[in-house]
Every structure is written in structure tokens, then in C-alpha cells.
Length: 120
Image (tube, rainbow, N blue to C red; front, side):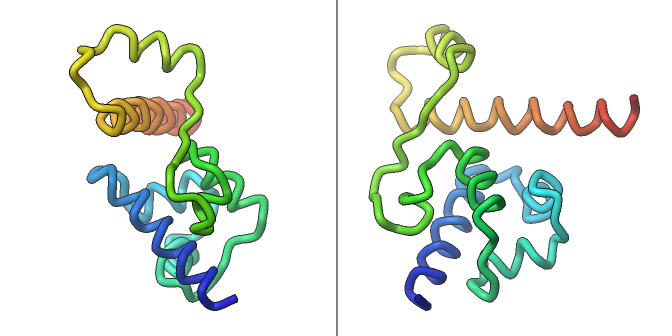
């Protein structure tokens, strides 16, 4: 069991670090939890409940198997709108770069939606 917790923590931290603008506080806000709770997930000191694990997987567009180290490939699933945006980006962008671009677009949309809720 400890190995699974450590793997989850490692995967979670790596996913967040792929986006240099995404902080632990951003993730905590996105998940509706305290920053200390989120930090404990990345440190392997706590494991999120299944609902929170699903939110994390949805946010990063990965499977639960990937989060738990049972799959090596992230296997992203993108929406039709995301694929439409992707179609307008240079063909020489790698799959990994494309995934980063689309994840960043989602991050910005979520950030602004949060602002709209607090100012609306």
C-alpha cells in the first residue's frame, strides 16, 4: 500500500510541475481543499478520497491508472473544442507540447471562471 501512495504522490507532483504556473494553492482551490491537505497528497502523507482522485484525473486529463502508476502513458482525452483549438496550432508541435498547450488553456479558463464567481 505504501508503494501505491508514494507513486500517487510522485505522479501528482510531476503533473503539477509540468505547468510552471500551477501552484499547490491553485490545485487546492481547484479541488476545494486546504493547501496543506494538497501538499500532504504530494508528499505521500495523505491519500485523497476517490472523488478527489477523480477530480485530479479530470483536471490533468489522465486516467486513475496513470495517477497510481499502473499505466506509463498519460493517455489524454481532449474535448471537441480543445481539438478545434489544436487544429489551429503548428503541425510541428510535439504531442507533449500540444498536451501542455491544451492543459494550460484549461487552467486559464478555470482561473477566469473562479474570478467570475468571486466578482459576480
